[in-house]
Amino acid sequence: MGTQNRRKHRRAQAKGIAAHVLTELGQTPCLVENLSSGGLFIRTARLMPVGLAVSINVVRPGMRKALRLSGRIANSIPARTLNGRLVPPGMGIAFDKLPAETSEQLTRLLRELGVDPADGPDGAPPPKPPRVGEPAPETARLQVQIRGVLMELGEAQLKLDASAKELVHLRAENEKLRAQIRERDERLAKVRVVAHHHR
Image (cartoon, rainbow, N blue to C red):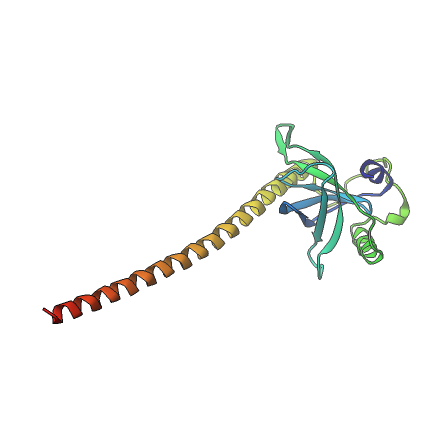
């Protein structure tokens, strides 16, 4: 389903779109590089095995709620160096058959990104001349690097959140132990007072 879908669906460059991939192994933040009605390609620091079933929550600034999709990992590409620059790893995800409402939401998002799925396959259109304000190739490469850093920051934030929860738990345990020590000291003090009066 993966290769065939990628060829028959028009793809949109997903500017400013992020996602969370959810599996039985947990949740992974990522950035969406391109999107079509048949699947998407993401950049993520955590590659997953081809064929793995996943859920994807796609978010974009201005969206009232995440677009919830499901599919399978179609391919994965490890990190590589291109022209002396590190290109972060990525994965292609082929969507399952989408419910009508979800399909409509995806179609609306694609149209907002400048692609109408009704126009047919993207094939290999000739490159368009860059418009005024569009990033130059060097800028585009820097944006890819920035995305990689943002993904690493997302992973670090998840680890930091987990550490913060563990710290709260340890503090609570520490308070319990201190309370037990105070109770013990109070009992010992009472025993000493009683012993002193009986001398």
